[in-house]
Image (cartoon, rainbow, N blue to C red; front, top):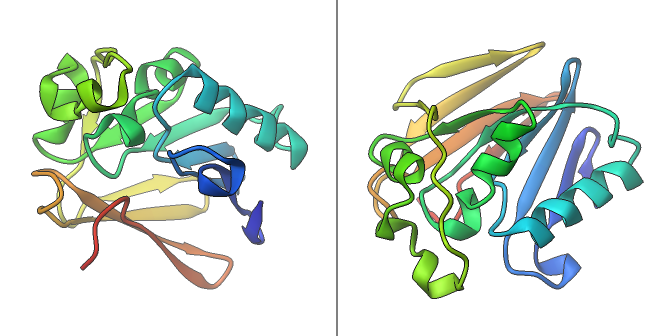
Amino acid sequence: MEIIRDLYQVCGYPFGVHANIHAIKYSAGVMLFDCGTNLMEAQMAERNLAYWGLGDLPVTHVFVTHVHQDHGGNSKYFQDKGAAIYAGPTDADNIENGTAITIDYALIEKAVPCPGIQTVRDGDEIRAGELTIRCVHIPGHSPGSILYHVKLNGENVCFGGDSIR
């Protein structure tokens, strides 16, 4: 569903599944905020991107809000398709290694290790085309939880996963 111009929810509760995945369209493609648990959710996101006319654009970045499998479980899937994967301190290491802190045991999906994740820290800014993604470390729900802030078409948009602050 289109939330505002260039911002979409492509997986999650409105689609009858648990994991929320959001997408921003920008000049070089699409960036995702969280990437779901399993192949079914990744494919759902891809179908919804196609529905909105974004299916031929590359997914260039995945910004994982925290380590849990329902947020970063498809990191390797999207990395294999060419996306750069970002996650907060400690969480990035755990996603890279597929460790138990991903809580894969609670979601029945085995964590797939994803080496090469780029660790972001509080205050980091990532430039992607015309956008700047600002990182705010909000530990609590997980040690490396990150809130991502983007100014999109004049609107402040924040992605915080399961964190409230």
